[in-house]
Amino acid sequence: MRIALDGRTAVVTGSSQGIGLAIATGLAAAGARVVLTGRSGERLEAAAGVLRSGEPDADVLTVACDLASERGAAELLDAVPATDVLVNNLGIFGSRPPLEITDEEWRTYFDTNVLSAVRLIRHYLPGMTGRGWGRVQNIASDSAIVIPAEMIHYGVSKTALLAVSRGFAKEAAGTGVTVNSVIAGPTHTGGVEDFVHELVGGDLPWDEAQREFMRLYRPQSLLRRLIEPEEIANLVVYLSSPQASATTGAAVRVDGGYVDSIVP
Image 1 (cartoon, helix red, strand yellow):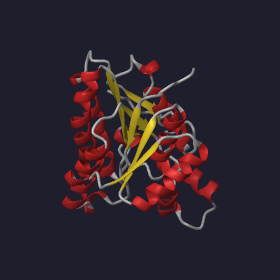
Image 2: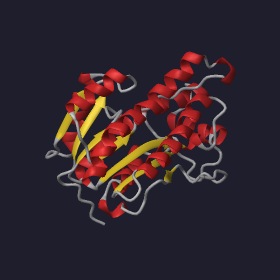
Image 3: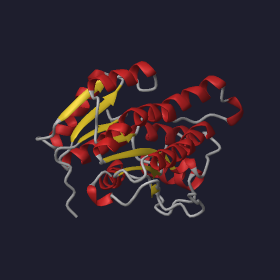
Image 4: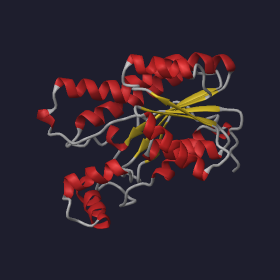
């Protein structure tokens, strides 16, 4: 399958590292002009350098802004008024005993993981439907379905993204624009390495720590390992392509084969 996104613009939020940067790199490899976003201009420029090292001909724009706020969203929209592909990857996670999660933490997770996506969809979707083509993808998580006891605030925010995707897909019905969510399982990033060691102990070698984390905290996984960011990027690039024109309103999974979860 040859995926060509030449002439398309793709905005990827939370793309200075990890999954977001892998997605942006995959989209650039397919020919798209990519927009990297994050709060630190310095980190974004470093990310753009990493992307160009793999894709020397890539057309890359960086926009430093805090998309968890209305002001940050306005800054992005001023810089990039229209896009063909929107990937809402921005998200935060962390462990917390359920009874200790404060109202402020709940609001922070909702603003960052949910409302940041809603704002951008609300702005970009009318242009996509008017042009008769567009792709919106919200990066969700297996935690949306199998809510983890150690971070239910994160799980609830990702469950909300499934509803956001389905609802906006109905708004875009019949227009040539698709809206989907990607359910990503535990993924190998620097932040997740820290999270794993926090839960299973920092003295274990990484391979052993990874296996212990999957055994204790994600026993439903059939992969029995963390997913690599590029594996998620492969699915996102496909869903961004013309070949995925009949997939919309879906929760598409790259979650390690969870065996006890059902997507409504």
